[in-house]
Image (tube, rainbow, N blue to C red; front, side):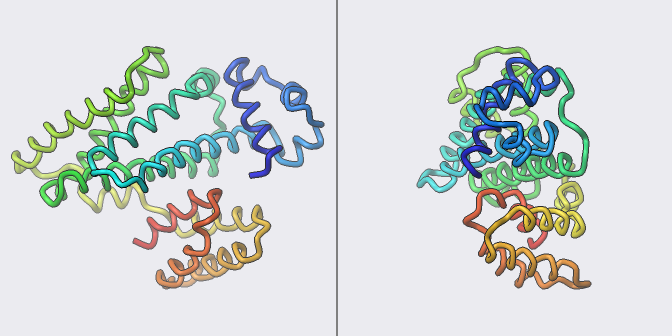
Amino acid sequence: MKEKEKLIIETSMKLFANKGFNATSVQEIVEECHISKGAFYLYFKSKDALLFAIMEHYFQMIHTSINEVEHADLPPYEKFQKQLERQLTEISRHKEFIVMQIRENAIPFNEKIESLLMEMKRESYHLYSRRLYEIYGPPIEPYIWDATMMIHGFFHSYLETIILDQIPLDFAYLSTFVLRRMDDMVEGLVKSGDEPVMRKERMETLLHVEKAQLCSLIGEASNKTEDENTRVSLDVIKEELEKEEPRKIVIKGMMANLESDPSLRPLLSALKEYTV
């Protein structure tokens, strides 16, 4: 991301949080950034396009913070606790911006927004399920998606308290507290012998990525990139997806060429889901 683009995004987040999305004009944004309107429209076609870019930037900040812990040499339980704490911290840092979106219903409903929100949900579910399996091992496998949805529900209930009710909580203690409750719930699930509610095939339907959606995302990414090697890799993946029987080994090979570009992370996550 270019420095001026980042400046517009970060400045706009503050203005939207303080004044509201609808009450903040493009003129106010450019004045605060000390740039011209022409420079603004060079990066963003409209305020709605800017809002989408802010959401992508916000998602990337959370992902980057969590990923720092992902590569740390820590036991699974401690790693998950720290990742949950990072999520809470990053979300709380921008709670005024989130409240503004809820209050004004500022997010426009379109395919791009829907795709981004689904990607955020998909990545969260996969993080939780991966950590839970590392902590509890094979006994939790039949209940892995039920346990994932339970901790997801816990987490978001506390987030509502933090964001909407403005109640300050100790994030380190809260993340540890939630994981300890999961110890109790997982023990109960395994002992119960009950049939799982969320079986693997149901989650695959919920988190499924369509080929047409992937091709659309690839087209957008190809138009944005200035790197020729990235564009070629994206084109190869798109050509493969358009075949009646895509070769997943070819797609995975091309994906390796895209790992270094953080802006392609949502797309890579969706491709990984498709190639599982």
